[in-house]
Length: 603
Image (cartoon, rainbow, N blue to C red; front, side, top):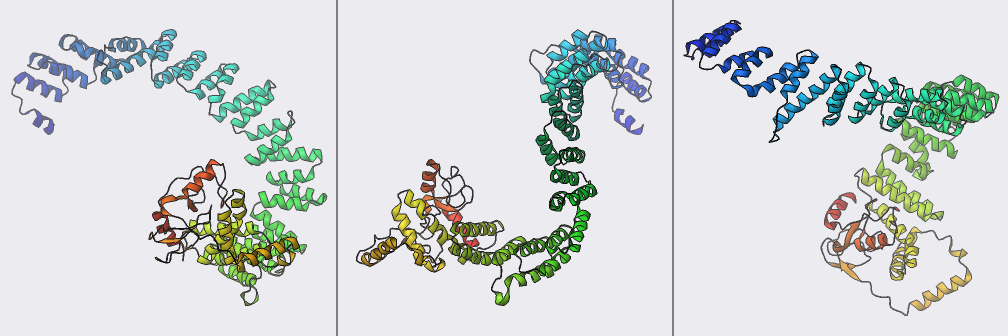
């Protein structure tokens, strides 16, 4: 009260002051009379507007401010009965020659109100037509809801569809039994419930394929599998659905289907998937199919089921299988104890590595590393040791082991296997942002250089191929010598002649190109600069050291090379010599930035 009086203490006009006091005292009729007798009669209209007394405000507006009538009518329309609201919404529409956003919004509210009230007062045709003409989606939804409540399903569905409310449109069509219209809308419907409802209707009408599609869209995999098995007789599709959806009830249905067919192995698998483990085990024992049961438990079983199977195999003294399922159950120490008893068995060693990686137990893994290193650190099984180091994230040790494993691949004649292994390790170290040992990088370069020789010869790049063979000969100790006695006599004589006579001829001088770091001249196939003493990356397509003016990277493996070579091979639809990736995305790159990054990667 005090605050209100303070706000009017500066008013000098008697009638205006008294009117304000009457307003404060809620004597609004007296206040209106005095406002009208004052110098500001418009305040009477403002008072009635503030009080939301729209009929009295409209009466005052007719004489005092007719322009306000549409806006007051709009407000009054939101409170009155349907018939009066319709009249007031109609009065509320104003002309908008200047396309004023405010007036446009006002008119949209009024026209939406006209559409709603027309429907509520029974003029469905006018309301629906106006709702369709208006741009907004909300008015279509609101009018459709009113029509749905009035059980005018056809008109409601039309407005829902025009307003892009496809789920609601389909739901209304289901109420109206308009199956054909539901079918038209189904592609745009997202609600699983509607798809399932329509699927049941189609099933009753024996349109099974349509029903299956609806069940799939509605994620009702149990009914989908049921129809696929019977009556559609599509077991392969039913199996696919169960595998992808992991439906327990669907798996039961598939299992029963295979039992009837006498396909016990498949039945066992799906019984396990459906958690009918005891039934699956009994069927496996009865039909000597424990291997299939074990495979199913491995893929779909839980910890307790894995542990139960591990103990079963332990009683049978099948240490490998027992350890396998102890590992799956998380009993790593028990599994490792069994595996160490068969430390010479390759399968047991491989499983022990898996167990060690999963356990992340330093005591177990250190014991396993000791076993794999063998006596005097001679690496009893370097391939498994490498796998263990990688799995444990011990990349430094893995890199050293990778070189040893690559040498084993070379000794077995698998140069691609050696190269791919070193490349894989190289990329793993880069991903983990760890420094790459020089020896490993050099081994990768030498083997890769040897591997691309044939490709270069096929491309008629004989000089490049020859240079890479010279590089390979410089590291001949990295290659096995056991094939020397197997060289055919006619080739052996030719090689010896070349060696004897070649000494009298001078080699073609090796070209020089600028060092990408210091710009000093260096031999094309040298990997280190004599001036700045820097290690220079090699081009994976030619074997030459990179240069700053013609630099790029493979878009996939990011290994370096000449941009001109990447573009040439891309135009010939050839792939990266290192990773096999598409080269079409190769673009000129900043060699300096790459070299700065590489400096951090190598020791």
